[in-house]
Image (cartoon, rainbow, N blue to C red):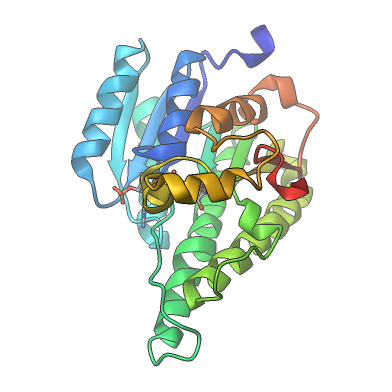
Length: 260
Ligand SMILES: NC(=O)c1ccc[n+]([C@@H]2O[C@H](COP(=O)([O-])OP(=O)(O)OC[C@H]3O[C@@H](n4cnc5c(N)ncnc54)[C@H](OP(=O)(O)O)[C@@H]3O)[C@@H](O)[C@H]2O)c1
């Protein structure tokens, strides 16, 4: 299992203080990595996650940063590198839910801009800042968290937020491939993971209602809603030397929902 060992690596997980990101941060810590987690609004969850990671026997630290601000993203990456001596793995996972305004509402223009800022521009700022360090320091592995929503339209009503979300995730799949191709020259691998429905605080409104879960599970061949740990295995593979000949791919982790 040495190919999956992350001892001596420094990993950053944006949105690592909740849900999928927290699951990935725990997995990386169990594999021996030093783990930096970033969140924006909930500083307490950040401190708690860092303490949980340290309890697994690794170095860990919480960084409060709004990833929609490119200057703050640059500063966060500089701090991680200064605190831990490098950055080898970065997971761009943070997501702030957007409003659900209708497409024909007055609020739609503002809603669209805010959504694209959070869902699409933010991961670009992160990739850029992470690669700027990695390219001069022997490369690294960048993992973007996309979504099944970037692969298919789905059955929900087309609100501004929902269309912007799917459009952004589809664009993130393209961004991943474009950056992977270009940055291979620096030894930087760029891949993505597309989760299906995963039980996290972001999906609580759905997963806390048995009738909604029953309806969703009918569309999932493996017969259950996913857990953050289901995504963590794919993240460990892409972060580690086990995937050293893999770049520009997307791993769909959706219980078979796309073929359901
Ligand atoms: N859950 C699913 O079913 C599902 C399915 C497909 C794809 N995904 C993707 O998986 C990723 C994680 O989703 P999740 O369900 O785990 O969400 P979550 O539990 O709500 O966690 C979101 C994380 O992002 C952080 N965050 C939010 N806005 C931020 C900002 N502006 N700057 C920095 N950090 C910010 C949050 O920290 P604060 O609260 O402190 O701001 C939190 O740590 C997202 O990219 C999402 O699109 C999720």
